[in-house]
Image (cartoon, rainbow, N blue to C red; front, top):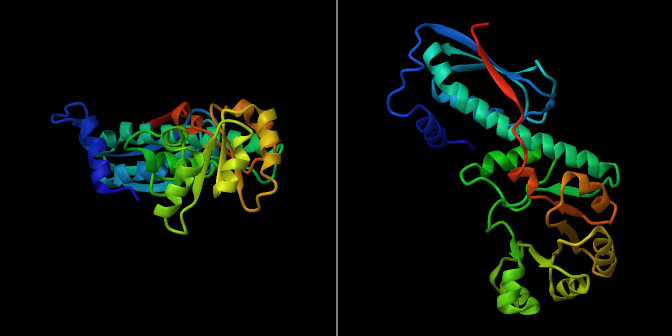
Length: 271
């Protein structure tokens, strides 16, 4: 949930200590408008900004809605000063989140052309302080959040393997986690995929492998019932169909959050 403390930080950063620009008298109405086609997200955050300023959001689309240029995303009414103070923060949050949702939907659609089952997932490559906003935007676009933080799932990465060894790393974390906590193990070669599964991995992450090697690794994991195969590592939207066709269960993509351009939005008052 978005807290008043979060909204206050966002507004303090933008308004500062002496706002002359928005000292405008009277009441007004405002509209958040799409200037490009895409999938909207972040409207809960935009609403929270206006409501913190005692402006009233009178209408709002649901996150995940597809929009075209000219479509209204939300409407707000209140004092001109407070509506204008909230404008830029609300537009920035919604534009950023909608860009992520739009890129995620594009990736999901590309995956569905090859596989009805493969999940498109985000990663922890998020903006500090905005992870909740960005992860919700991924969901709005039809993707999976993956782990929300380090406590959500154990991921045995290359540095853990370098320090402890593959099997010893898995064993160490199995001893320290609840039965309900899954262990995701990153491997960089086809040969290491069944090693990780045999040692107790719930998910085997096939890192930076080509689609051909990924397909071979998936075949190697076929004998390990219940073990999921995850492809990751520099995968772009253009790469998604090739990886979706390999038989993996999950394609995780940092680019959903760290490289999505903002959806172009505009805020208009007094209309």
